[in-house]
Amino acid sequence: MPWVFRTYRKATGRDDVREWYAQLSATDRAKVLTLLQYLRDQPRDKWTRPDFDQLKGKCAGLGEIRCKLSGVQHRLIGCFAPGRMNFTMLVLVTKKGRVFDPRNWENIAVERSRDVVADPRCADAWLW
Amino acid sequence: MPGFGETIQNELQNREFRQSYVTENLRRGLAYQIRAIREARGWSQAELGHETQKPQSNVSRWEDPTYGKFSLQTLLEIADAFDVALIVRFAPFTELLETVADLSPHTLAVASYDEEIEAVQQEGLGGAAKAILEAQAFSFSAEDTDRKNAGAGYGFRQSEERLLPSIKEPPPEYKPALAGVPS
View 1: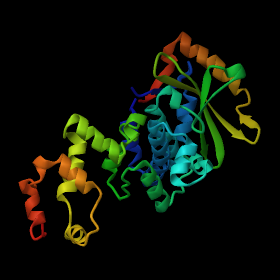
View 2 (view 1 turned 90 degrees about the vertical axis):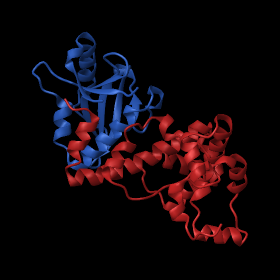
View 3 (view 1 turned 180 degrees about the vertical axis):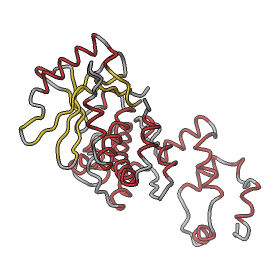
C-alpha cells in the first residue's frame, strides 16, 4: 500500500511546503517528485539515509526527507500522521554549513505536528 | 488536489522537467533496484562486492540514489552478478510512467535465471516465465543457428528441451519470421 504525502496548511490557508515547491526550477521539481515517488512505494523500514532520516532530541518521532537542490541541502520535516501510511510535511528547512533556515524549525515542526494530531484537517493530501 | 499521476503528467509538459525526470528516475531507479535485488537475495553489500569483484564501498555508491555515474560495463557486471538481464534502450514517456507506477521492493527485485527456471518447474509454464522460455525457443536468428552449428551453443538449450517438449513448434505467427532460417 503506497504512502500518502500531505502538507501542513496553516489556519490562514497558506501552505509553506507547496509554496516552496511551486517556486522551484523544473529540474529541482523533478528531483523532489522522483524522490517522493520512490519513497511512496517503500515500506517504512526502507525509508533510510540518504533519502530519509529519523530525527532525535526535541524532534524525536519526526523525520526528514532529504535532498540537495541547486547545491543546497533541503530537509522536508514531517510526521507519520494522521493515521497509517500518511506522512505530513510540516516545514521546509534549508541547511548551509551549520546554519538552518528557519532557525526555529524545531519549534515549528513540533508545534505543527501537534496540530496535525489534534486536527487532521490541517494535513492536506498532496501526492498519493 | 491532483495525485502523483496527474501532477507528473502536468509537469511533463515542461521539457526541462521531462529531461530531469528521466535523469532522476534512471539514477534513483538503478540505486533502488540494486538494493532491492541484493536484499531479496539476502546479500550484504560486501557479498555483492565479492560477486562483482569490487569493494563494498563501490556497492554503497551504486545504492546511493544521487550517484548516477554508472558505466554500461559496470551495469553489465552487476547484472552478471545477479544473473539477470539488463535492458538499456530509449522509450516513450508513457512507458516510463507505466514503469514507475509501482516502485515497491517486491516489484524492483527481479528473479535470477535459475529462480525463473525453478518457478517454471514448480508451477508449470505460465506468465512471464513461459514468455521467456518461448522467446528462447523461437527467437533465434540465423546468426544463432550458425553459432549453434559451429558448436558455440547456449547453456539453456538443454533445460529448454527438457522443460518445453510441448511448445517446440513455433506458433503460427512466428513462422513467417522464421522462414528461411535453417533448423
